[in-house]
Image (cartoon, rainbow, N blue to C red; front, top):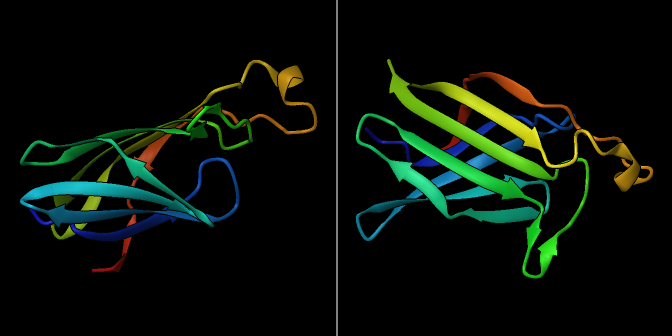
Length: 122
């Protein structure tokens, strides 16, 4: 299966699009999460032949976690079916139950949904 390219879908925690860039380097698939001006390498990306699975902690920094409405775990799994990438995407906000910690930032809610990203750049 060829998953390479840039796949775009609506963000779970805001009204904008986010993307996953999947590339093949040295025979292995790698992924980068793209959200506005943020480019985050996806270190937990697993290609299991018939599909792939990834996890990403959004908000992780070199020295801890930066707290925003986007901070949390993004979990995705996908397969190619009839030329279309389909699967599940899940977002688990880090601080859903702790709104006082965030001050003015409105905490995000957990989102689990079917995933049908669009290929925007092969």
